[in-house]
Length: 155
Image (cartoon, rainbow, N blue to C red; front, side, top):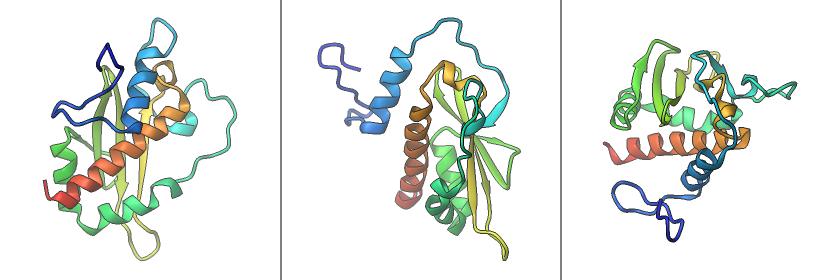
């Protein structure tokens, strides 16, 4: 983050996109003290502090799940190239660092004759101490897009 201009660049010098910039500034400006990681994982609609909400389905991730399902080996290679740490969740699971102590788990299930491929993101139950609810969707979109793009490039 450039203190003079507020512009945000990645480690390689390229300019960060909207999802990255908004997420970083939300994290930096999010109010509150004594922010703690709970160690409990939850889907985004079940985070502590949410209250009663409408359920958030997996349709948000349907398109990218199909991409991941086409080449599981490339999916795993992309996750690991992006710093994902394998976890025993779903058919394939990875934990990704987000910022500081905050991480997200991507839990993927292959398609079969009855169900399409699906993925779920699990957040620390205290995520809303660090970010606004809406920002979790920017982070999710960025992560899933980056995995798919890394697969496409063959890294």
